[in-house]
Image (cartoon, rainbow, N blue to C red):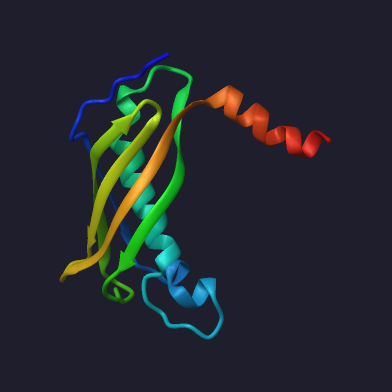
Length: 132
């Protein structure tokens, strides 16, 4: 089944920087600024939102890779927002360009690949690992 997604589809997501999503929550000895893993999750959320309403029922997307540059630190209290733009589709593979800003500046840029999958088949394959 071929699922065509509109070129240049866009999605956004935002998240406040709190003590729960700072680097020192992910790795002891680091600092209390917005963590890179939190930025990855925010960027993924924006990409998911860019195409979710175009997928047939029973389908979703899963992450396949991200090339990220975390450019600036965001302190607790500021909000980080991300915008994802679909830049390409090769059958089930979707490629996004994503940028993120806090209240003051650009804080991240990424290229992100996601793949269109049937939810049930995907989960069935994944859970075979625990059924062994």
